[in-house]
Image 1: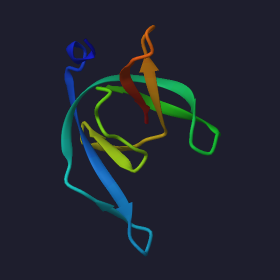
Image 2 (image 1 turned 90 degrees about the horizontal axis):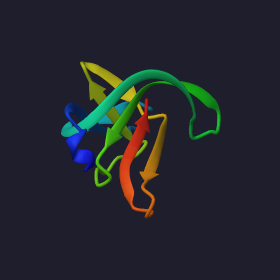
Image 3 (image 1 turned 180 degrees about the vertical axis):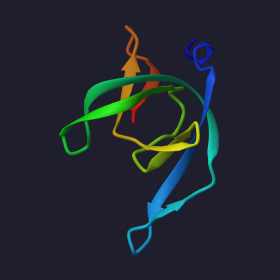
Image 4 (image 1 turned 90 degrees about the vertical axis):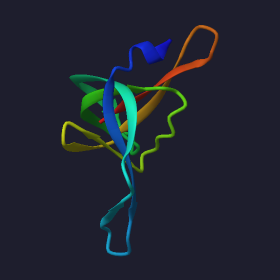
Amino acid sequence: MINDFLNQDCLLVKTTRDSYGKDIKSDPIPVKCRIKEEYKLVKNQAAQEVVSHLEIWFDPYVDITFNHLIQYEDNDYRIIDIKLKRDLSGSITRKVVFC
């Protein structure tokens, strides 16, 4: 059902850090998503409130972690928070990522 709403494209890039602290990027993986551009206060991994610019919906089976970058419209976005959204039966319907 969620796949009907995922009508936009973005790229997921897995990143790792080398011994000098620079990002090493893997090959981008195209995924379908739904992007809503709005400013929202969310908590990051350090439990601080920060402002996110994008809310991105993904299929629940997309493997995405905080080590990924999201490329959208020629910009790289770091992931601030990842939330799993569930329906009334407890099944995961989508992953929501804030950047």
